[in-house]
Length: 489
Figure: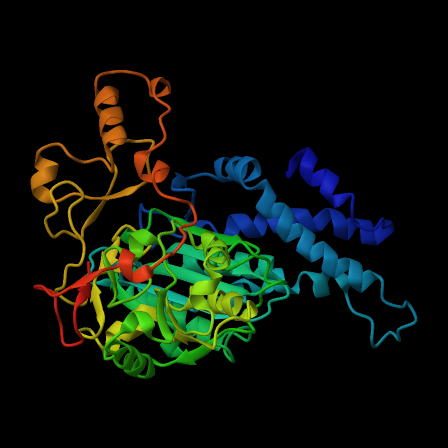
């Protein structure tokens, strides 16, 4: 089932004999069956029919043999991890002293598989709803997307992965859920009924009920169509900063400021006559393509492509933060948790603050506040609009424009800002190199004929050095000036 690699891994566990060996042989089979169970969907022929189909990796399987083959060949690692988790618990159980009284003895199989058996009991009862009620929400007015995270120590992330997969499948949710020993981070889309049931389950779960509250879930218009599929996985970090949680922990973040408190701090900062000499830095922790279409006024927005570059950015520009009060913000708050912990660990800042709930929560309270432009989101919507300001421009003609599209060259995954007029002229790539590459592709040349690096990547330093952030971010009055002063361009 798990192949040679899985067998080699299982050999790392303690040698057992007799009935205990039977348990070791049964557990992988049960783990496999549980994984397949989480992929079940109602057969489309009739919602009243009890027949089951299976959906996995954007494929529909209508018989057991085909889904079994798919899982065995494509998901062996996930089966292994779930099996390994159960076997570790079993090893602990079997190593306990044999001198227990008969009343204290427990069935090791029952004890070690209790998590697996409980997956179904951790799913909400949806028998009172019709499938149409759960599956509706294909239109943006009928469904929504939830964004949330929760930092807390988790002992068995692989079991939580199995539960989250089953839960999302049960509610017909799509999206991404990252799980680690440090917590969980999710963005899921579905009908409003499905997302409300999801929140209810998370808030009542023994794992998270003391750590999550309703306000931790940020909702926006959307639905299951905003994501191509459901992806749930176990990782070292719930947000990829590239540094082990053992070295930089979420337990030592900056001071959390509510949207109202953050708004007052930004207002105070913007009211200063000479912001460059200020002891405060308003720091955007997001990537350059996010801050390009929307940001707080007079912020420092690092020209980095990934959050995993943020620690190196801080190291390279450490003097910039020396003796400063830093006001940090990101989309939903999760990047600031680890980012502020990293900045604090450097010991150069006077104080480090972060916006609780991120831009999402700020815009719910202050849609016309000091954040101007759109909010970038990591799904097929690309952005959310809370105000009418446009702070970015078309890459080709310079006209105001803030609607991203993927570069038209198939190998490139860059996002491009090209207005409707320029798109009509055929300017649909992120740079001249990609535009030429796309033209040659359409002429029938094979993809192997061009290996050029995209200009967008080639001309941008991986980790920029800030000599003067105001020189890189000039301000000017113009049509986008709001109550808080000039908008960055």
